[in-house]
Amino acid sequence: MPELPEVETIARGVDARARGDRITEAWFSGFREPFKTSRKHQARELPGRTILSVHRTGKHIVFELGPADGHGDAPRPRSRTASVEPGAIEPEAQWIVHLGMTGRLLVTTPDAPVAAHTHARLGLASGRELRFVDPRRFGRLEFRDLGRAKGFAGPGAEPLTVAAADFAALFRGRKLAIKAALLNQSLLSGVGNIYADESLFRAGIRPARRAGRLTAKELERLRVALREVLVHAIRLGGSSVSDYVDADGERGLFQVEHNVYQRSGQPCLRCKKPIRRILIAGRGTHYCPHCQR
Ligand SMILES: [Zn+2]
Image (tube, rainbow, N blue to C red; front, side):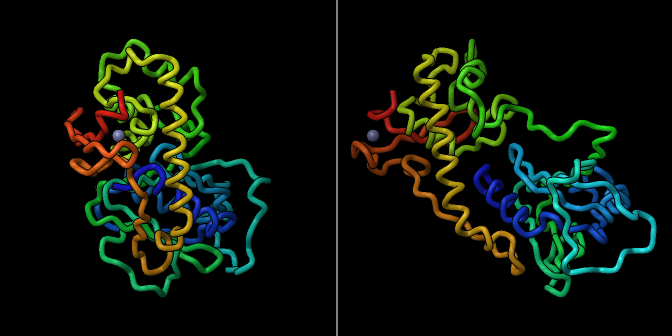
């Protein structure tokens, strides 16, 4: 399952390759599952739109799209240099991609072999092609017309940018374990198991402690720690970005060295005492009983 840093890395990689490009055609598979908006509607709405930017919100990849240009008319001549100044146009629509468990978003060329389980192919004016591949079909593709619907926002606060007071307010009065609260997507968007464990270690906080009982100081340590582990992972991911989105579709799993995650029984890198594993909210939870209080 792609975690936030992985999704951020993919969104940046696609942005670097597709920003300013125009969608000329769209093809979708006959399956029902990956389409939050019907494939017919997406196939009608996407062609003719310029990709103004691509970014991450929570664990979703959001394409900001310009107006449908020449939609329904004869296609414009393809130009390899066709690119607009993206900042000059207000987004009128969004294409929202959730990778689910096994989804991949590739920037490739039309002649590259089409992988099994390809559910979407968007032809671009530059001659490139965007593909969505998802064997297990837990991913989701959605189209939003911003004239009719609000822009996509994650259900919870954004962990990279949430302010100290807003972060603290998320946990006030909550009886659940802080680890479970970090994973609760309606509080924070996109924090998964690895980064919950790693940020609690970095902040020196035991994962089973009641969220509402943490002091303001501890919560601030946690907010900073969470941002640091995410930014660090994004930085490592940045170097392997081409592996995610290039033609062969091979997934470059970047290695982040973990302090506690999946290290149960192994010595803590700080104090040498063994890392312990417990279950919180049904999830394997790793911590150092000596370094975390
Ligand atoms: Zn330790």
